[in-house]
Image (cartoon, rainbow, N blue to C red; front, side, top):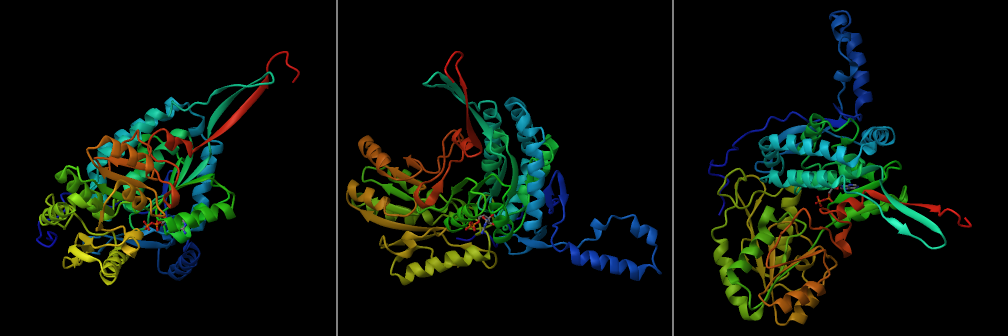
Length: 528
Ligand code: ADP
């Protein structure tokens, strides 16, 4: 069913889009790129108008206002319409942002404040974001085609506000009459490159631990969803985060993103996105200054239902695990393995439940699933669906685009899927589920691990022994037993294998922004 065309989905609030420029050193500025030409044009225009126009008035403006700098379009995924033009940052802009962050780190107060002072500013930031939750949610719906769990995002910031004064080293008991201790120091300038699927949440997942650690920051939001990061930068200033501590450069991956990952003066990069781009980022680090990188990448996570499972629960979790956020989730449990004893009932119940699933405008409260984020993703997902059909999988539900406009796709469930089909191996990042049958626990382990990815896994069983055995045997960053998407601020999140390394959430998230330094002194009277 498609609920998007009935006119019932008008936004509750249409946000005013106020921030579309780069945020560097506490100010919104145009992109540096494109300046030269337009400056010439401006000077040319000035000379021409000299005789007829009031030159005095023209001079009263700064030349900056006459710049015509580069911008790009961001669109509403419900309609494909352009909602704003946003500054297109490139290498030159990244250089300026890194310079501001460097200055704020080397000479500014942020890394020199006590942890509790930093925590206080961060708590204030959380408060300011909370006050603007409605505006932020509307902005996110408009730009990313999805509702926002603002409270969750503020929760991340609050968690790390509380963590800021709990970062400490160890006292070392050393041999040879030495004593020592470790310091955990902020690494420096952190480049944070984030994706479009949860724009606000990703911003806080990366920014909050970096702030708590005492790093200064250059964020590059995804080109599909640049608006929330700019708004959040504005709010950070309101909350008293010092200038230069958070900088936001909007722009494209191969230009602005690559400029961050290959920058000689960026000390660490934390990235969430595709495995393909994660590889490029690691490469860029290797070819530049060997900055450490943390990569939260793609997945093809198994969701395993055993014969003894609570059927209703299992179906509900499988649906959530695949169609939540229109399948645009790195942890999507897209390989659903169901044990043969319960398989037929599971399949039937799944198909029945999907009949009441509504695809449509995310502003409409009746809607379960919004549009894919943009045309490219929409076409990519439809391509996979066609490939699944061509490979011989059977369409149980969906299988087609839907809606008269916008990037809507029917939730699609394939049966008769073989492990080696492309749809069972590659991350689709859309509402596409592969349903497969298995016989034994051993087989479930083998097939669950039969992937290059290792982000998440889910299982449904009442048997504690099966649950324990599976939990220990699956090579993934998280195993959800009788639940899925059970994220919590105190639970480390991040993958292994080609799903990357480094953790978001929990105190582990701080590690990627901290350096451990050992300080050693001889004990009095020792031969040292
Ligand atoms: P997805 O496949 O989910 O769109 P990507 O991995 O392409 O995710 O993008 C995630 C983020 O990485 C975005 O902010 C994007 O602009 C950025 N990005 C893309 N290509 C590069 C690159 N070559 N170097 C650095 N960042 C990049």
